[in-house]
Image 1 (spheres, rainbow, N blue to C red):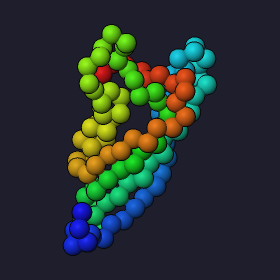
Image 2 (image 1 turned 90 degrees about the vertical axis):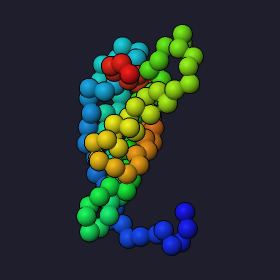
Image 3 (image 1 turned 60 degrees about the horizontal axis):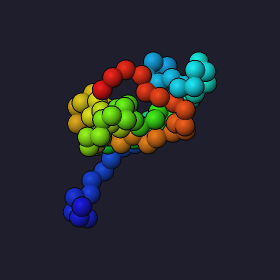
Length: 107
């Protein structure tokens, strides 16, 4: 990126909670962090998305050990979903404390 490409932006922060996207993989219901932290950067005039940073505690692997194909796995699916929902911009998942937190659902 060059200095000529720089432009004004607005930034917003927030949080929400998600209790249906992950679980404690040791069988301890409710013992994980469901908070989702969000930083969203937009064009000031139009509100068009530039970027979103999302912090969520979830282990980044949903594929089993038998799947050795190259994949963005959970992080890639998550980022593409956020970008699609926002209608543009770049999304980045910043992983939270995910030690024993497994993703729910399939990819």
